[in-house]
Each structure stands twice: as C-alpha cells, then as structure tokens.
Image (cartoon, rainbow, N blue to C red; front, side, top):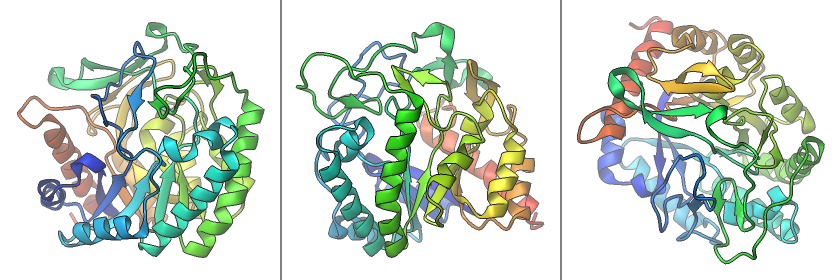
Length: 357
C-alpha cells in the first residue's frame, strides 16, 4: 500500500507538494475541476440552489501537454501522479442527463481518456451521479469542537430539485432557462451508466487507464429528484458486472460504504480487494449511518481502520490510499493540520499491518 494526498487544481503549488512529501505521501490524486471558480465553495444544505460553479476550465478539455506539464511538476517534488479524480461537469453533463450533447460529450470523454493515458496517469476516478454530493453542513461538533461535516436527512429537504444548467451540485450553464432538472428513476440511471461504460471502457483498456467508480455520498435512495446508483455495498457488484474488464474498477471510499444503511464494510472490502477490483482507496472515519452521520477524525468513529487496512494488506493491495476528508483543526492552517494528522495515522497504520512498525 502507498500513501497519497488529494489536491485540488488551486492547491497544485510547490508548498503543497512539499507538504505532501513532508507528511509521508509518495503519490497524489488530483482534482482538475475548477470547483471554486468565481465563488467560495460551500458544503451546505443547498440554500443556494446553484451550488458550486465551474468557470475557468469550463468546456476546455485537458490536453496531453497540460497533463504532462502538471505531471512533471509533481514528479519534480518526488511524487507520483496516481489518478485524476472527477470529470468536469462541463465535459459530461449531457452524458449524465441524457441530453442532446451526449454523443459529442462521449467522444470528448474518449479524447480525455486517451490524453490521460498518453500523459502516463493510470487512473481516472469518477462518480456517475446527477445530484452529486449535497446536503451536508459544516459544524463545530468534532472532537475538541473541530469543524466537521454532518449529514442529517431531517435537517434538509432531500427532494429539493436542481435547476436547469446544473449537475453534480455544480453549475455548468449560469444562464440556463428557468425550470428544474426532470426526475430520473433508478433503472433509467443504471441504463445511462451502462451505456457510458460500454462506450468508454474499451478506450480505457486501449490506453492503460482504469476507470474507478466512487459510491454515492450521501448514500440515500433519492436525492434532488434523482435516484442514486451505488448506495449499498452490493451495488458495486452490479456496476462491475455491466462491463467486465480490469479497466472497470472501484474508487473504494471506506467512509461512504460505512455510511450506507445496509451491508458490511469489511466483507465488501475483502471481496473486492481479493478480486483486484480496487484502483485506489479513500480513507476517512464516520459515526452513524444514513439517515444521520458525521465525519470524524480517522482514529475514532465506527470504522476499525487497522482492521480495514489489514484486509487490504492480506489481499496484497498495492494501490494508493488517501484521506479524502478530515475534520479541520483549530490553527492557522486547519486543512493542512487535519490532513497531516490523518496521513500520520495512516502511515503508521500501514507500516503496522505490514509488520514494519
């Protein structure tokens, strides 16, 4: 197992690359979407129905030259670029929504996968979801009053519709006409996913890129008028069965699976690690399950992190593990402090299960 750090486009700086190495990371997972363009990010209950924005990167495909330049900068700091995480909604909104630009956007996604392969990046993480991540609030309820993310279905109207011009909790068309995104049922959404995989997986195979699917978070049945796909552990099996290929893989999120109302995290993790289905892992801890839970520090919560890492080790998992979220700590650099704590814990735990401690 290898320790990594997730970085956003705005965080691709020399200081953060140095921070990653100082905290023990050997790899990075990069979000290239300009989530924060034009406004501050807010993991809120959705009072602002327009959600996050996509501005600077909107409509622009990531070129081989751009990707290669970023990779070389990452490598100059002794790090390896393991995965891109999440497509830009501007690149595939009509793939998700089954809209008029779907065919053209699928061709663009083929180009993106080819570019990622040519740039030497082995994994493309994605979340096939219309509503995306929505409904959380940030509250000072963590250990020592740390700022932590909380989901409580009683505190938010999960049926709040998304306005047109929005998908994955992000606005890709600020001037879209009035109205809401039509409701989407479960079977229809699974059919859209299957078509996406049937078109993209063969290209990924040719390019040596694995597509890694993230489960739903929050893992509810419906959100903002849309069904959810992987909101129970066994639905990972359905996703993998749609197209049988090593390129059809999982971005296994321990926290998201633990939040699910049914199933057993350790059983699911063991099965998929043994089968080689897991491309990389998100490690965070949580307390509670749907309909109410909160994220906590990695050394507490409902997940026995040592047990989970032991399962990965016993199944010879050699991929990257990153802390995707963590409570923020009370200091001048709350995100960095929280991540440093999580990474130090993970590094020691990985060495412990490997018998190196």
